[in-house]
Amino acid sequence: MRGLSAVLQSDRTSYYSGVFLASVWGIFAYAHILAFLHNGDISLLMFCLSETLTAGFYLIRSAPRTVSILPIDWLVAIGGTIAPLFLRPAPWGVMPMASIAITAGTIIQILGLISLNRSFALVAAKREIKTGWMYRVVRHPIYASYGLTYTGYILANTTVLNVIIYALACVLFCMRMLREEKHLALDPQYREYMQKVRYRLIPFVF
Image (cartoon, rainbow, N blue to C red; front, side):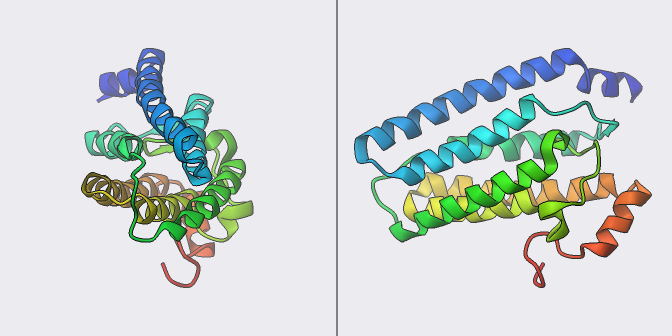
């Protein structure tokens, strides 16, 4: 297990995972920028910005104090990060006005990332535990922003493939959220935080 932990936390693993993420993001960004130039839909740029922030904060994240070495945590994290990058613009949507949710979700995501700063992680890991700003409202404001952004995107860009990717991404980010909490709850400070901020995604609901 120590050998696996060393490999997962190595600079080489970090480098190659970053290269892979950047490659998939590049194709994703190209498709959305091209679609924006074609139809002028600003929500496509907002969605591109949302996913760019995720990729960017991953690349500048700080070194973790602890990181999960469970394969399920790595699969869920990688799958949940990569899946939305396969979403593609569509000429039709069941509710085009829902694209406004993309802007709202991106704003929440930006505030969440500023609150989290370099403690951002993909795989369940413990860096500095953040409890201020957006993290006083819910325990996972960034995941809340994902749910809002993805829902708005699917309603405005409805295809069978996008719906499948959306469903997969939502399942994975919920699993990822719960796996992260399980790992972080090993720390007494985080357990105390969970008692103070009782809701994960939506205040007074869940």
